[in-house]
Length: 178
Image 1 (cartoon, rainbow, N blue to C red):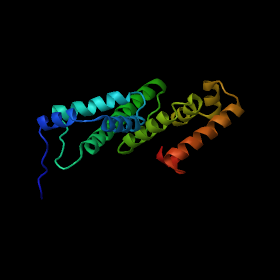
Image 2 (cartoon, rainbow, N blue to C red):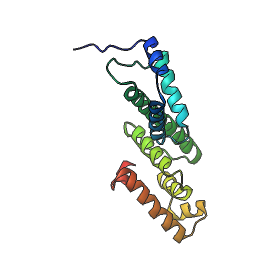
Image 3 (cartoon, rainbow, N blue to C red):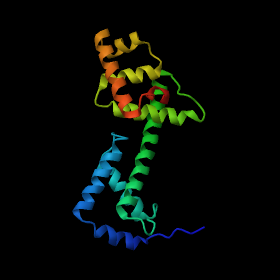
């Protein structure tokens, strides 16, 4: 089996110093794309964290791999890590606040991750997000409407909007993910 060889920190520094605007714009766009997974943070934070990990040697750049491709993978990995951390914090806070536990065992992380990603996608729509979170908590439709100050028409409209957005993002079987 071939052993992977890596660039030195000095080589990384020189490569980063040679980056030009088109590559920097590309990296910024990639960071914006990945940060959508965890909108509580900014794309600048993601790119900065990726560069920090590479420059510190925590993430090593393999020889032969283009720098932008490597940094894209680092940012994807960090964004995924942040989603897991944010989901764990959100679920723990939710469980403490309402006394509802998510599935235990091996499925707990997947459940929290799916709910966090769905909630993040619905961040632009507080009513749809509230319906999702109420459903996850096990609230009845009446309780959700009462908590959100909605009548049946507003609830049905927001619920249909939620279903459309989540089906578009996760496919028609999105409900199986939670």
